[in-house]
Image (tube, rainbow, N blue to C red; front, side, top):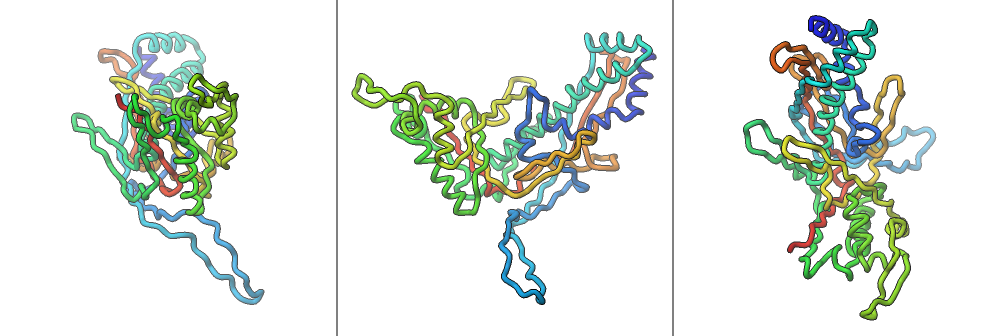
Amino acid sequence: MADLLSFVNEFTNARYPEMIARDPRVQFGTPDRTYLGAQIMPMQLSDTNIIAEDLARFEVVVANDGDALSPPQIKQGAGGAELTVKLGHIDLAAQMTGRDMKRLGNLLNSNDRAPAEEFLSRWLTRAIALGMAEKEEAQRWQLLSDAAVTVNYLDQPARTLAFPNLNPDGHRVTVPSGTVGAPAGWYAPAFDPMRETIIPLKIMLEQLGLMVNRIVTSTKLRDGVLASNEAMMRRSGGSMIVNDGGQLQTIDRNLSDVGARFMSNGLPMPEVYNLVYKTQLNQRRFLDENKFIMICGTGRDAEIDLGDDGIRVIENTLGYYGVGVSDGQPAPGQVITTRYSDLKPVGIYAEGYLEGFPVLLDPECIVVVTIPEPTA
């Protein structure tokens, strides 16, 4: 165990936990578990834990006619209200015991400590860094979906932080679904979601000078409700038959029919986001399966420095996930610490924490439609 203690100390002194904590790639998840919200609101470091932002939408302003000998006129984009965000504190702890400890001990029997370092790095990434990234992702989608974020401190009731200035009129709507016996809205055969809900919202956005470039929803809504809606699919393709009641009925409908209807109306094919995260008691979706979200281009780009992997440019961001400076730290960013404990249960203890909160800069560039299930 003395060898394990020295290994953990060497691992920490080599600043491996710090490199894992500050690795910008973690915010996007893994190849088989991608966090879509990080592509919309990527992480941004802040030297202060109270962020003040102008909710001005970036706009391209047309040039003037001018004179070659006169100075050009300075133009401003559209102004907006100020948004002040106080970053919250999130944290997570884990302890390596049992099988992982035995595996690490076996790796330390070799003269080459690189495999042990790689093993502990993977464990810290999985147990701490990705766990923190999941909390960040959950907060992103709460703010995007509801213009509010729920916080739940230890031994205290949950509290919802609402941001009315991030919820412009007409940008978050609910289409009632009626009952199982008398379905309405998107669940009603005669109701066309495209013509009666989606196109009117698209027109509203276009009147604001905005163009929809991304739609995010669930498999339930895209491949289930929309693909099963008779009025919508009748205009989308598929084979038609006359049923026993003498009515036209669409058959052989598929995903390409749904996509064709969206593209024929100048809209992108909806993408699904079904990822769930686990709590101590159950599991939850990052994006509620009853949400249909339309996202517009913003002109805001974010550059993510990936070190040896170069620069990743994310276009048309809606804002960012702000990360500030934790107590006792000289610079902004997530913190991961490790230590070896010989107290029961013997193992390696690790914790991660940061000061952070999502910052939505373009509330007008998102529309959220809620489609509740029909009631019993």
